[in-house]
Structure formats: C-alpha cells, structure tokens
Length: 410
Image (tube, rainbow, N blue to C red):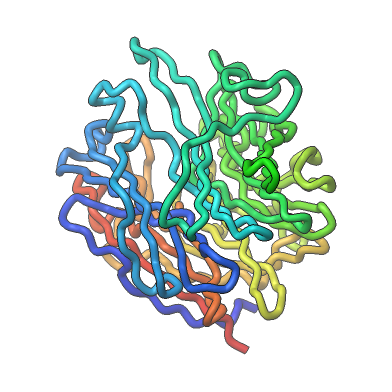
C-alpha cells in the first residue's frame, strides 16, 4: 500500500529566462534554532542550447534563512563554477558546492567542498578538499583549510592514502553528511581512477587544537560487468553503534543492456571499511530499479521511521534517465530493504513536460533529481528543493526551483 502523504509545492526561486537555480545542502546552523544555510547554484543557459552547455554561465553562492527555511537571502559574493572558470581560462576553478555540518558538541558550523586546480595547459586538474569554520551560525567564516588524512605520511600534496594526485581526481557536490553516535562527521565522495571509486571521510573536531582531524576510508568498487563507470555519489544512513548503510549511484551498461542498479554496502566500524557492494532490493527480494542519479535518506523525527527519496522506476533502465517520477519509499533499517508496497509518487511527469527518449539525441526529458533535502523542525515535514528542469526543452534551458513539503498522514 502506498504511503498516505500530503504534498504541498511552491516556487522557491522563479528565475528569469534561460536561468535555473539549484538549492543544495540545506543545513540548520544551531541545535535548536531557526537559522539555516545552503548553497545555491545559478545556471544561465544564455539561450545557447544544450549542445553548447560549456558556454553557459554558472555561479554559486551561500544563502541563509532566519525562519527555518521559509525565506532565504543571499550571503556573500557569488563564485564562478569550475566550468565557467575553465572556459574563461582562469587557472583556479570552482569545483563542488559548499556543504555544511553542525558539530554537535561545540555547535560550530563546518563548511566543506571540493575544488580542482587547473594546470596552465588545461590537460589535467589537481583535486583538493577544503573546510572552513564558523562560530556564529555561518555569518562569518575563518580561513580556508585543506582536508588532509591524519597520519600515514599524508601532506597537503598527497592528502589521502591510495590517491595519486597526478592521475586521480576527487569531487563531491551533495555529500549527504551524517553525524555518528560519537559526534563524528561522515561524508562520501567520488574518486576517478579513471573508474569511479566511492570513499568516505571521517571528521572529528578537536577542541584543544581548534581544528578538524580527518581520516579517509577504504574504497568501494564494483566489477566492470556491473557498471560502465563504477559507484559514485553515495547517500548515508546511520544505524547506530557504528553501523552505517550507504547506497551509491551506479550506471549500467547501455551498449550491453546491463541495467542500472543502486549498489549498497554496510559498514560496522563507522565508515572506515565497507562490505562488498550488492544491489539494493525490495523486501520481496526483487531489485529496486532507478536511473543513475542521486538518492537520499531521511528519518522522521517523531517515529524514527526511515524513508528513501529518488526516482524509482517500474522496470529496469540502463542509463541516467528517466529522472521522473520523483518518489519516496520506506526503508527497513533492520533488514536493509525497501518496502515495495510503500513506493509513492511525489511528483510525476506533468502534461506538456518533455519526456525522456533517446539520450544520444539529447532527449533527456524533465528531471526531478539533484535535490536539496531536510526535515522541517517545526512541522516534521520532509522538504525537497528541486530544480524542475527544463520547463520546455533543453535547448531553451529554463526552470523553476520547486519546494516540495511532504507530510506523512496517519
């Protein structure tokens, strides 16, 4: 039986023509207050068309809210996205979006992101992760600090084990950071070797040193027969007692008609090591079919029930589309299954919206993916911030950022 939900939608950002906004990584800035922060990316297609996407203008900017996410205002100056910076031949480019984590004991706010450094010949990039600290709920930030694995001879150049900075790249956009029982931050990221490998960083605030101490995890891989690229973009769920469950975006192999699967793995030591990945399944043992896109866990505060948000499909697909409908389903944290009868549509493809077809022809369809998400402290609603892209066609790139408020009904 589908979930009994009430869905409200309104427009968070209604941009001008050719522009869309992505509202990513929303986070509360204190343990009990109404303050929030997120990163907003503005993409201006300039009417150039989908085939000239490298010429689009992109910037990112922090936004803050004082009323629990009801209204948002920009904070600080916009930053060029890496794609725009590269086209303009700026050697230092912007990488992933700023993400945020509230340290539970000190209530310091930690911002972290990935950032590539471009070489002068633009033949390769060098990946770096950085973090900043705020003592006043994200109003002001201290200096940028590199994230470096503690120990093992790692330094600012060779900043984590089993990572070659001259041949590997690492990045995250929506790391879905979680807090473990002992107050440790855990977030996932993607390493390209050139195949994708999923890894995680554990971060712990050391009060006497006023800094974060970082430890990188082992990597998660899948066989080439399972995916054309490998696992990436993980989401995380803390199960308590150091147990953590992760699912990962893993594209199939369209040329060989190998379907896309959401691969999952379990850690019993707080994200340091992981089990051999396997496909995410329903409680009846059948696969959960999704496109290669992000998904997210959220836990209902009152009941502790866990829900999974993504683009669940009725049957297998081999690539990254379609990314509709937008769906949710209940997850069993004991058996580690999706409850099949609970799959519920939040937003289906509306009349007149572009449908997915042949990706080789650019027929990507409307996408309801790459959403920011949080649980509203006052109402208990799940909130998804979704760029409803595109309005009409990818050649006339333009979309609203929709706020979905989802309430579970008795």
